[in-house]
Length: 512
Image 1 (cartoon, rainbow, N blue to C red):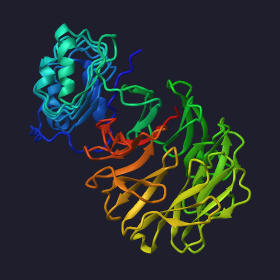
Image 2 (cartoon, rainbow, N blue to C red):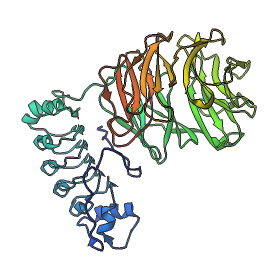
Image 3 (spheres, helix red, strand yellow):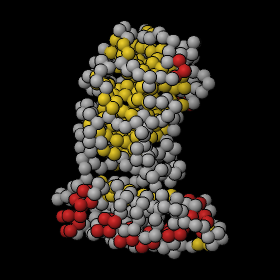
Image 4 (cartoon, rainbow, N blue to C red):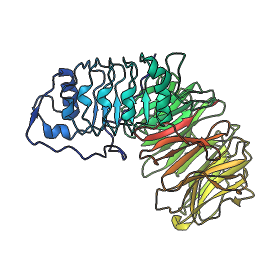
């Protein structure tokens, strides 16, 4: 069944790059009405005004509206919301979209699962960049050629005429527009983005949609719509389930097809009630889940539980601050860092049951963010000097010996991530720690041959390797929003994977 491409962002703050047209002036005091009662109800619910008269002033203040699944037939009157930037009208009974013709500020439009045939009214919407027309009656794509800002369009499930099938689809793609057209064997001009691995990500910070892109696909599938923010996505080792934390307060899992959503554990369910939980990961054998539970103003502990949310074990029940635990590749040890009485932090390792804790670093600077090499023989970490004026990436043996500095610049280097073969390390460099501008770099595991893969004029962060080491994924705001990007390991062939009007909050790459 076709899964529509949803652009959910109704309650988020305004995003850059949209609605550059001057806003329409307010006609104070004018009273407005709608022909379709269902459309009017959607507007009233958005304004939280169920009965009173609607004024032109109120409607011009609306920049986002979700009116999906309302059995709307007639859009007459929607032109009075002339400052809309995002409009979601999926799953209605709309044929005529003439009322949208003058909505010059519209950037994102979702018309999936309607009966639209004529796209002419959209031809002057110069700000439109994300368009979902899936499962309509569209035959002629000609009107889309006037949309200079269009970046992505979903066309699956439309009876396109021969001209559109044979030439217009390809011509739109040549203009740099990402086309998704997946039904029918003859045509598929949607770009294959991923390799032999799936990808899951969440859109929105306070209210999230959870999406998945299957392996070898350019499509995305909506797994879950959540009323709260989704954080800390993580895959089971066999790729059968996705785990996440909802609103930093509870663990959930669901299957790859979006079914079987199950709550495992909440922060307040713990014996020592916590304010939030974070940093989850599945053990390599798939039997246990590792995480941090923190009490604001008190301690943060490292715990494990079984995959049903039972048999919870506190591994650091010592009333200290413990952070970012990571399983060793064989699952026998856990790496983490701890705040010392002196105020700095040091790298520790302990057995998987919490026994035999060993301090691996002992330095007056802040040592944090330890990561095992793929073979478990080495560890990278970040050392921030006093005052956090600079930070460098270091490596050491798994027993804490042979500490070596890998980056030696007066910059701020963080987030080291080993390539799957252990030969390279990707990391983030900030030239100024007070600025969010940063770039993604790659170096040899020995610290040599550093290569800048992105420009430092935007925020580029959270690098992750593909399972085969050929690609790097990262988050960037280079196009206005925080989108998910993919590039070759040498920085070539950059692709905006999500190209959305809502920020990507988090993402996780699944196993092959």
